[in-house]
Image (tube, rainbow, N blue to C red):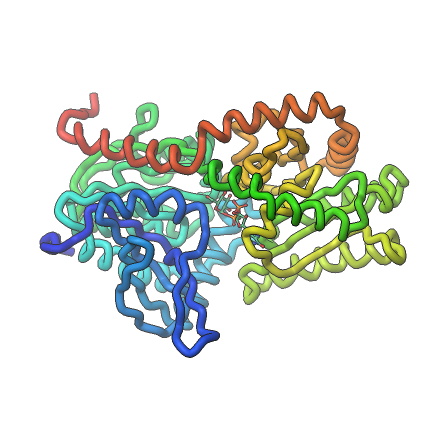
Length: 485
Ligand code: GDG
């Protein structure tokens, strides 16, 4: 690869992510694009608007070439994925190889050379698009495990730009990462970035250890010395790998939860559910990493041993459809639905439902009302990069009441230690902690929730993106000054 000249009308800030932050509605006579209200858009939209930004990604529709367009002050550059690439790059290498490998091999990762070839091909397409979009000296921010090769590919094409990467999911211990047949290519890909951000300090430490053990690179505190790579055409540089825990848009969620319509809807939800004394909520993509089966097992046992009465306590479990063409996701759906059906068969009655289970998504406003209605939120992930649901719940608890039961294996547990922390593998412990949450005194609930909220008001998604981009900029400023002693 030989370097490309910067385009004359390029963007100063370029986001590269698998998906564009938009959805297309084809139901009317003309297709209509709307921005999807994710945390990443909220965090990055102001930076995009202030910096002549562009966002490169897939629009979610296979086999279709879509021209770049502007929406809400953002310039979007859609890339095409073929149906075959959706199977091999996205469902295959990203979600059946990397996803399970990076989540503690809860299910076995599959290694297929054809998937890897597709991953390399698609990453190259994203990197070339970034190289053609970024202005001279621009900042390029690459997101997530689907695009780990992009940083080094961009660096080879455009040595003048500053490159950041953020990994939204965990980074596995070096001993597990070792299984990946393409581990050195992935490490070299990521190490093309100037700054590599992770959710937890432990993820950053795992990554630096993998760089030492599997690539033989020297590390010093958060820095990694990356030597020249004649094969990819990149020069020697120092990469920094650190934790930047992601957060939610606290002010917007707080305001939405104070809206009189939301408050009325929350009351209506409780009354529709028969005004239970305790309403427990679970919200997850239907994914084997989220520990939904463990949660249902604990909940079913509490009903069976008479510790909770379905007339007083009810569970609402939202399991949003996800990656439905992948076999392990079909299996987890079967397992969860069998468990929910069995529990309801045994413990529900006419007019009393033990578990309200939903396999569809809800509008954002309805989610806010549910968070506001729920006395307890259960997060029992077996491994989770961060878990935004836990933070959204806290952000919506404007009355400073409510109990968050949170898995130790979610990144959020690192800094939400006022939650009731649980090990979801320990079913007895999980049961005891669910009971503890149900029985907790109002004063203790308030003390814990107040502390959780104080922290979340300070550490919101805006401060997350600011902190990442400020760090990247500072690295860039003294690029020539920093030496490896
Ligand atoms: C990955 C990492 C990391 C869910 N159901 C509905 C709905 N949602 C929204 C939630 C939340 C988001 O989806 C899920 O975010 P999580 O963080 O909980 O989990 P992942 O999807 O696995 O996200 C994770 C995250 O990236 C960010 O870095 O925290 O660890 O795995 O915002 O509210 N939203 C609506 N209806 C639903 O039915 N509107």
